Length: 587
Image (cartoon, rainbow, N blue to C red; front, side, top):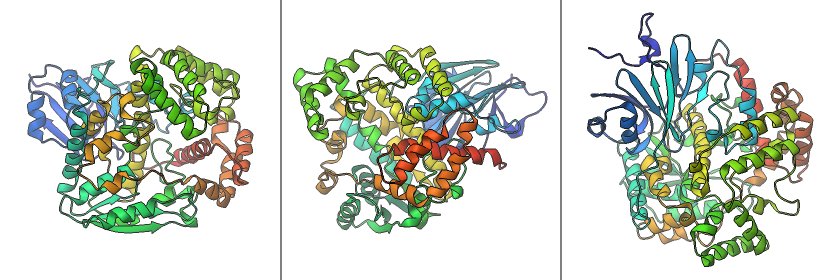
């Protein structure tokens, strides 16, 4: 008997069997590889294993889901589809940069690596509740709900595997990466990152890399330069930035590494945030890359059309951990270590130690489900979860953060998101700092996904080594409590490469600050941003009160402190909604 295979869009025939339809689109990560074995495997993106290695790995698997668990252990950053002709399993990458969506249609279940080809019927329609949740809880949504930003389309969480058999759809929890001992983690991480950079650059005609001067991009650029090929290293600097010593550190590293051909790119008025919003490309999901598009275009222009461009994106979330790691420390560590961490953060942030201790203890006793309920109450009452005198830093010790967008949201939108939070039933595996770290990685991965689309439109194939599966797995094998400390930035990176890379790389104690650029950009582009809120699409959807946003916008334009992250979210979404209305291109 010849088994039916999943139908691809261009292969559809009227009497095709009831198998999932795979909707291809220009948003799919390339390359696409199909491997035939007892089970058929399709890989989307950069799997660093050979076809034979993939076939051998799954040769004894009896179901697509079991085969998928093995496929997801392979090195690279990719999504996968496994089929035995009767059942199909799909999953994305560990970081969430490659994701799946699905929808039920009259002819069966359709799946795609973008929500857009599933939403065109004939015009995509936005899901207002999902969009409101995306704005109000940006770091929580990837695991909060199956609803996507498009009506009628479901999103697959990066932590799940989707299994389809005929019309039946179910999900299974994605297993955690294979365990590595804390003692072996530095070597495993160093080996995985080095191999990732080598594999991505080995066949490239030309190689370029970001060289910000910080730990992450500098590590990747130095590793690339040691593959016996010249690497064009790009450092972006900006006269509007405050405490910007990136260029100095980058220059010093480049001087000591013959394989790096250093270029410093100095942005100006035309590269300020919020400039040229109308020129930003359409992406299938709203992205904070929209307000930064002219800067991105400027800094990537010198390497357009090159072989591969390496970036350090993802290093912060892979190598670090959210501040809630101190809450885990209440029950996992000695009192001495816990107090040392709290004291260090208190001094760094100029806060009383006892308040940090009190906040950490309170959060340690709270489940993620309780945190969702508390956030719902905050949305319903618009009252902070903590007393007014508690500063932002203490309040950041929480399993989730409510965006400042909430104070601009309509009562109806807040009430609907609050209700969604109350009915959410997360399992116990969502508790603790390690689960919190995974949620933040997924949110960052979603943002990186959009950046990859923007860069591809500029003819720059970007590689993100820190989000390769084995690199990220090595990082996550170290518990959050042991992965970070107030005394040292990214200790795992230092442990892995202190004897392999220049000591100057680990000497830096500062970080470039580009927040002032946002204020300058708003002031220069005030007219265009005001126009977006004068005829607000988010207001039309009943999500925000534009008058409330304009109050904070005018404060920012005048130079007063304002929630710039939230303003960027709203501006990016307003631009995206307008682009969606007129989008008529290929899916």
